Image: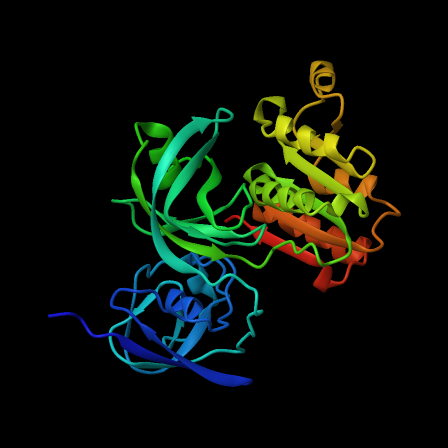
Length: 350
């Protein structure tokens, strides 16, 4: 006997929507694939943005100890990204968004892991051959599920193309992190993966006539590479400047420098790439190896703030990386650069 689908009704100050939720499907996923503008950021149970109040019906949480639970104020509140409905439900949320007509609609799909390789001692790259092509915007991410490991992980796409049949990712090794330890620990080529994609609001659209500022820490450079590829394909840097600041701890932690230099070389008068080393002085050999890239000592947000003085007019900023680095960059952009929040896009990797 096939389990019945649940009907979910979501009400907000600005309206109400309803959609069907398949057995075992996360409420957030069901709403987003149905084109409902539910609020979210991380979609992995960390940020609390997708919280809702259960008015009627019953749900089961897949991760009772999710960090985002600290934002729930009562037993009737829940995280839509972690909850599965087992009957028809009515929910209340703060607001419903209006998805753009051209925004890619996320969906569940499968794929096969290909070409796993190490970029540094603690950063790995891999590809996923998809069961079917998808469209996504530059700067978006995918939720990836690994067989035998509870929960999905969010990774930004490195590449950009329409009707993509292969997605590229980078992962930083996290001690005790189940997925990163699995990826670094053995033979993973050919593993079937589950995905929900595309997701994320920190996207680049070439129709926005602005200079591009990218501030990335560590594996946060992934989504920036997608943004830079899209901007390059659309010749955005023929008329607008690009400023890329990539922060790593030390010289041995660097990666994607060849790819960044290739992009910079296409637009030498418009695109500037700076790599900031936070924990050591810049080796002279590194400058000699990559003469087209600027190297500096310091935290990446501080280096960006110093080099961008007087250059923040008509800028759209993109920020990605560890939460402390993102928070420091947002303070720079809002308080010192005086950018409008509408001109700041960011992802925190918790």
